[in-house]
Image (tube, rainbow, N blue to C red; front, top):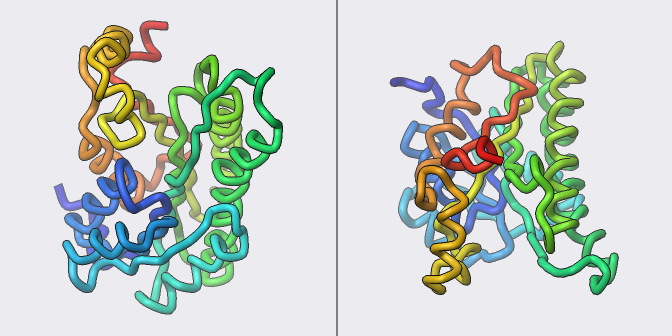
Length: 250
């Protein structure tokens, strides 16, 4: 299927590895060009080397809101346009809340909620002023649907991202700006290495998933590309769960 995103320019945060890198590869395979942002410039350069001329790697700390918003200018300056934003970057510090400094929760909110809001805002201002349509894809988590023990800050931030998505989808629909959320479950990424390296932990994790496996990172790519595509032009304010049936069984 032709997703009609050939030549479209997309910003993807948290693009250096895992789900972010998989989404970048899917978008480029569909013909898009990408501003790939993350803290690790070396990893971004390696990713960009796979697709010469298709990826602009940008080192960016998601806690720096001005740097996050400046990604919009980087994309327009490099590619002459901006069509979509994928807010994928996030952190997930674990621990009992009673033993956790609330400054850690504040940082989690800054990275997982305020940074995506800042980037979406900057993109929306550009689209509204240019009278152009746009798409924002926020990568949340099933932990935002069902809060998880030891992940209070992460669950709260991802749940808030879903509500932000709904609010902005209503606020910006009149401008032809769409805002949707993807809520991934268990994926076989570096973030899950502690689980994957421990057979007992991996078995316990997989038992919670009706599909009885972790997802391959590449499985999130086609959904992301569709939500960026004009073919999803009537899709906004929605949350797409991709978790092998885990939330459905709860």
